Structures are given as structure tokens and as C-alpha cells.
Length: 336
Image 1 (tube, helix red, strand yellow):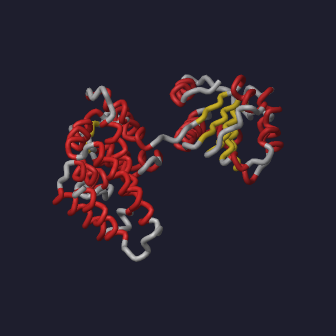
Image 2 (cartoon, helix red, strand yellow; image 1 turned 90 degrees about the horizontal axis):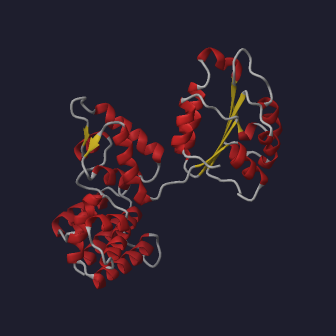
Image 3 (cartoon, one colour; image 1 turned 120 degrees about the vertical axis):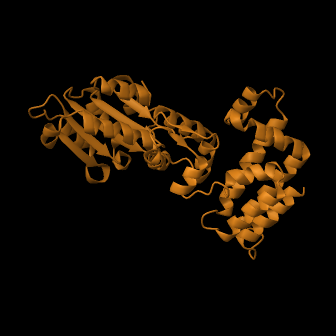
């Protein structure tokens, strides 16, 4: 049956091994972590030369994988066979013959990234009942800040409330990239005060703590005309670092949530945070924005954003520079 990342790692740490690990899904981060743990911890360094093999889907076949997996280990209790990029293998279904009767001394790890198995197939059903089948789904934008908070908490690191939102805006949903940047930040922290601040991010990652999409959202939501214009001018002067399509997408998400907020009957802090899928710290921002943009204005802003999204992609306005389009858009929103 499908199992979670935590369950798999917990068993591996206890040296409870399964003959087959089929790791599939759109999010490669957890697939890589599980594979790396097996690669580095199952066998001693002295055992790996003869008993650990890494193959790539493009360079092998299912028949070869089965043949190798049926070999016995040399002077070791296990052999580890890792198949990277297994999604490129032809006739992956043929692997069912081995999965039904695996060799207990072999640990076969299959990385089936960016794809999942058809749940109607015999292979899926056998994996699901007799092996470890792990499916890693890519996080949605709104789930990433909470993931960042959990990552830092597990490391014993605290952060300013806006840090996770700021990192999400800049780094997107790539968990490998986010984890790498967080590790860089953690290294710079003093042991006596493990706190990640927006200033630290600006210094070490290059994200401006004052000029980013998160701060633009806040300025527009408060109708802080001076601050919003300063940010927009910065974006216009640095288009490569601040592409208009991402800025519009960020604002569209913000005002869509604001519209949802308007129609909530229960506007308690916890319910708003749950409904909008945001950290409860940011509920006050939506409360403030709702007093500036009523339902009708919010709908008009969303309509403007859709229109300028099309323009930014070259539909109907081929002459304006992205920076000029953004300035025009923000002016209209602020004066709606």
C-alpha cells in the first residue's frame, strides 16, 4: 500500500528493509532523499564496491534489471540496485515478474520521477500489495510557506513571519532549490540566535526585503501609493529579476483570496487562515485590504489583472514595455 516519506525513513533507520522501493511522482525532492538515504546507509563503505549498483533508465532494460536483482550479494547481507530516471524505461510493466517474487537480499530502488503508474495496471497492484510504492505530489503555491516553516522547525530554526512567504514568492515550488537556499542561510546563523530575518535573506540570497512581490501585494492592499510606486519603478528597472508575468500572477492570487475573504461568513482568524490557506499572521493584511477594496472593486481589480496578463503576453498590445504595462496596471488598481 502507498506509504509516506516519514514511514519509509523511519523503517530504514531501524534497518527494516523491503526488497522493492518504487518511488514515483511529480515532486523529485522526496524521491531523491529516500534514494540518497538508502545509497549512503544500507551498506558499509567497504561493501559498496561489489554490492551497490546505480543504473539509468536510458542505458538499461527491464530484463537487465531483473537479472542483476536476482544476483546474490558478495560478503554482505544485501545488495542495493538503484535505477535512476526509470520513467524512460521501455516496458516497465514487465518488472511485475520480479516484484511478485523478489530476492530478499536485494534492495531494488526505482526512481520513476515526474510520472505515476496507472493504478489499473498489474504492476501497480502488485507494488501496492507486496512492495513499497511511494507517490510524491508537487506542492501547490499555498502549501509551500507551511512546508518552509516545518523545515526550519525541524532544524530548530526560527524566522520572521514574512520569511516563508517571501521565499515562496522568489523561489516558487521547487523544494530542492528552497532547501538549498535555506541550508545556505542556516550556515550563516549564529548558534546563540538561530533566527532567519528578511535582512538576512536580502544579504545572502539576493531577494530585496523591500522590493518584492510580497511587499507589492501589501502596499497595494493598503493602498500605499508611495510604496507601491517605488516597488513598481524598481521592478521596471530590473525586469529580469522581476518578470511582469510573475508579478501579475502573484497579485491575481492575492485578490482572488481577497474575494474569497469577502464571502466568508465566519471571519475569525483561524477560519480565514484555513479558508485562504495562509499563515494566520497574514489575516490582518486581508482584513485591511477588504476595507479598501469592497467586493465590486475586488472584482474589477481581478478583471484588470486578467486583461494585463494578456497584454504582458503580447495579446493586443505589442508596443508597451513590461515595466510601463506594470506601472499602468498598478496606477489603475490604486485608483479604482
